[in-house]
Image (cartoon, rainbow, N blue to C red; front, side, top):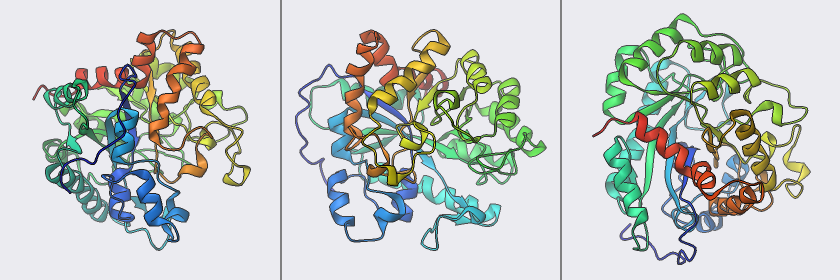
Amino acid sequence: MGAPATVRPLIAMNRPLIVDSHEDLAWNMLALGRDYRRSALETRALERGTETPARNGETMLGWPEYQEGRVAVVFGTLFATPKRRALGAWDTQVYESFDEAHRLYRAQLAAYHMLTDRSPDYFRLICSRSDLEAVLADWRSEKEGHPVGLVALMEGAEGIRKPSELEEWWQMGLRIIGLAWAGTRFCGGTREPGPLTQDGRMLLKGMAEFGFGLDLSHMDEQAALQALDSYPGPIIASHANPAAAVAGYEGNRLLSEAVLRRLIERDGIVGVVPYCRFLKAGWTESDGREGITLANVAAMIDYICQRAGDARHVGIGSDFDGGFGLSSVPADLETIADLQKLPPLLRERGYSDEDVVAIMGGNWCEYLRATLPEA
């Protein structure tokens, strides 16, 4: 594709930039053939009548919607499913062995490189502070149409066969690693509890030598607390709401109070997920989304801020297109562009303009400035 398509004028230029710390773009590109240079509405129209919406929901994402919503930076994930938790016979991103996981994760990172190399007006890979500042400077300009920066995040670390491969992953642009999705050889994960293993400790030791960020999302509480006590590098939760803020929640996917407290003490950031199941315990798609709105998301953000005593430890981690779509998000969301409805709700709760800018993207920008290499 050539130059960026015309988008609706950004008439409210005082709206804060958004940084979204979790989107499974590469998985969708390779498993479902989605092209995120298109608008979300165009993709929905193309997929109507196919099996894709049933597999992963109606997409929330597209380049024009990034522009409309001022989504400047996205943490784009590398994700593949262990065969025991396969999403269906149609899923091409499934592994049985560590070699297969390595191949799939490499292919997804290559997909980001190909996208950014071929369409730099749409997307640019962020591997350094200078890359980040170049993308942000473009968004501060008055021209129409800006590239979306992509920060590579590995969700589940099975693609790393041994710690000695970390240098290669770093050179290829990977900057953040989460040890779990389900349980892995490194630690317990969602619905598969357990502590850090010896392999997990060795991987963390290797990660620290390069300065990789550690993503606690999906890690079991025991493993997360061990990592918080032992990993000297930067720690985040890219997409994980606090369990205590979801009345009646049972399970180990969301953050326990102990993990949240230690994460804040470690100066970490939590990416809040606007997913109905993570906002209301027991919610299912058959319940409909009308009773859940962005006011629930604002309350989740406020919960973290109250625990932290400030607005510096929370951001957005939408997880959009990560196994759910339009029918599973708050009723006042149509696409990612509608996240710009959050700032007025936060201001109603007494948050200052400075706080709102921090929550919507500034906190993640500061994290990246502090952790990315200079060049």
